[in-house]
Length: 244
Length: 245
Image (cartoon, rainbow over all chains, first blue to last red; front, side, top):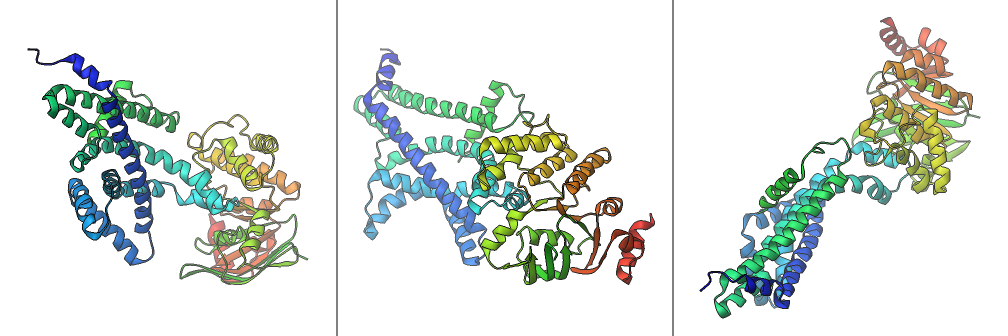
């Protein structure tokens, strides 16, 4: 008997079931990332607030969500909220828990982006007669974006991998589907390989997109312009590994 | 009647008072210079005029009309008539040289794009940077950046140009051509208020010199009088120190 059945892997990869599961993984990751960006931006602003209670809230939030396992947070949302009368479908729980957790990490990225735009830039923009939203639109955001895009790309890659955790609350994403498929016929190797190929495809595309975006945002003559593609990919891979 | 008249202006950064009685008047087409020790509030006066800092007291009259400094609409009107060039240039790092000069006319004044671009090109050529239109600020020397900043301020078509120590950061060989640009503006009748430590420059271009100390205007007069024969002891002390070497 053959140890591995390549035909089965191919069949799984091109099955509607796996494809839908991959879409689910992507949906959870993007939703949680967007939610995390909103939470992170709010936390970044709160950390700068004049009122001490607001700053305290932000610090408490970071302490809580960085200091406990994200898996605990996920199961907490899924199993404890119903006791308070809040019953959410698994998908909503997954996005909520991952988004709240992501916000605690995104806050630092947002904060560094805002801080990196010098006060002189805002001053000059206001002196030219720009209104507050114009200062943000034309001067602060384009410069902050250049700083936060690469780390947000890393967070996205991290989130794709992190989303596998939600299989424990019965959301039909890649890992759960692979596991379910395998448990029906014990072809674990093929099912998990198929899921792994999907993860690799998604993270690879993201790394390449990220490398190109970083290059586009970094102007001529700036640091790192001479890196070869393999070096850039290696750096992207290393970055992706740093997330949780 | 003076074009711009400041009477007893006071201002503070938070709880720290920085201006405590600034009075000066400027005729249309006149060039006045503010001199005085560091921290005497010279740059702050320019910031008040460009609407970046709200004065806590005193009055501003422009063209004979009082300016309500507490009203954001009139402050915005004030900004429309003044343009400032900073000591540190503060060019927008995310924009090319051409874009830096075009952005305010285009997005704030809503002038047609072609008009903004042709005027920006003309102004950049005037300051000797016609060949750097598509360079970014971090590719330019300090002197070049300051000349872009001058063009950017002129693109607003201001009635009064405020220069905050604009020659301090320039390479010596570049000072002359910036001065030429400023002389040209003076000949065109541009009203200017200049903060500078370069006494040669002040003496040459100003019709009036105002001495400031501790957030107050202490003495003013024509350069020959104020720089060579000041009346007040504080001005005499300051001028003596800076002109000795």
